[in-house]
Amino acid sequence: MAELLIAKDGFNIDDNEFQFDSRRKHLLVDLDAKPKHFDTVDITGTNISATGTTTYETLLTIAHGLNYKPKVETYIFDSGTWNLYSGSGSYYRGYYPYIPGSGVDIIYGEADATNYYIKHSITSLGPPLTSTAASFPLKIKYYIFSDKGTY
Amino acid sequence: MSYLKITQRGTDIERAADYQTVLDSRWPLLEIWQEKQIDVTFIPVAVNGTFDTQLLFSHDIGSLPGWEFYQDTSVVDAAYASALSDYGIVVTKDAVYAENFWVTGDPTVRYRLKGMLRLYLTDFTNTYKADTLTIAPEPTKHGDGSGLKIVEQNTVGASMRKSDYINFSLNTDAKAMSIHMMGSQAPDGTTHYVDLTHGLGYLPTFMAWQISLGVSPTLSTKQIITAVDVASFANTTTLSLRGVQSTLTNTVAYLILKDPLVIAE
Picture (cartoon, each protein chain N blue to C red):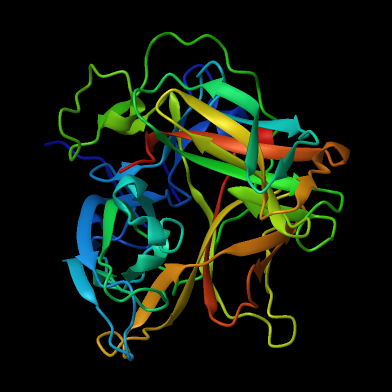
């Protein structure tokens, strides 16, 4: 089978030190997909509430057009103070937690075999809880890769 | 230095920004070493200090690889539905194990860990940082239909005729993610933060793991790379990684990717 190999700088092909090796899979993202497979979006959750349970809301749905559940990456940036550590510049990979007393309030990204989603959930361990997410706009960067994110 | 550069179809190679570059051999690409299905049952609780360390498979990367695990939660006993996830996976420089090193609970329960493990070809012992180039991008024009495709030879059923990029090692209609920074760093002794100066000019796309000596007798002399839950604070020049449920004490392995600039500025 034909191969494309590029040796690392200072190495020969025979040294088996490659900058690019076509025998390997690479993490690819579609540049032309519509809707976009990578983008930044401004998202704000609403003030959903829960009592002894979990309440969900879907903030964004993107049909990815792949026939499998893809690997996705979600990065959530808060220039304000709605976060676990109460400091501006908070930047989470995958999920963004807030702890409002006896429960947890989370914004996160996930995918199934049809769509990529940005979701918001609030879980109450008993007493009523209402999210304050509506007061805190977030900037979210996402990737939908052309590789599987499932078993 | 000579190098190979391939841009997205219809993009001038001299005016291609990073996000329009499909392959630039000056930067290492993030390569996937292996994707493997795992299905193992073990005792989830370390009873009286007895560990259940099971070798899943050997690999020949020769360094600690970055990894991801996608768990089939439908087979998990309800008692552990949220307890283990990828924390049951322990990776060394030559093998992958399932291990029960921190979970507590009912020792009579058997835990089934099933899912797909992806190993990346990474060597965190060699610190790497790419030069940062800023090029004013030129809009992509309609291409002439030419392009470069390299089929991924290890994917069953992959062929040139497939339209899904999962079948390709390289395709000029898709961006292959390349590495901007990679290495390992111990947390600061006072703050317990791992502060990285990335200099990218935008908020970076990153992955992180922790490196330590193994806990169980089987792995106590080996370095292991395991999952770590980190919060981070970031701006356009620095990324600060911090522990979530406890302060960071172990060395952190980090991987910062080169973003398509249009989404990151």
